[in-house]
Length: 191
Image (cartoon, rainbow, N blue to C red):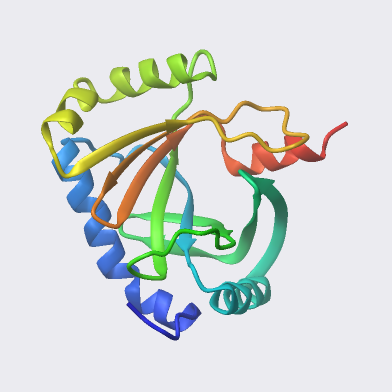
């Protein structure tokens, strides 16, 4: 999308990103208005762009985590001022460093909501999603443009499980996990 992706272009892209997220939620026939938007994520494939964004984000808040996930660094920033993405707000931004994948655009990629579960494992998260949004998996399966991915990223030292269910549509994604990033990061730091 941009050769010169930076915080200014990302801010300009927020409305279009929020529109695509809302299109995905409409296709899934779900309403996430009552859920907490935990964080928003940026995807890049150019290391220079990523390093520049890392510097810009650090100037707007605090770098809270530099975990290695699936072999690559992922930076988590807590911003001083909340970002508004559609009807939601969040202080948290995830910036994964590039791997081998090339994206059609370097910009916002996903939003992730906290969905508390009775058991914080994949089965518990699936049950919580079904309770919150009956028929969500069937609707996703009927939409050939939506892919569903279940993953359990694990960071060294992390004490909280982090199962994640992602619904991807075109170049955006809505994800659900049971704990806020702040709690997950705190679990990494505790002895």
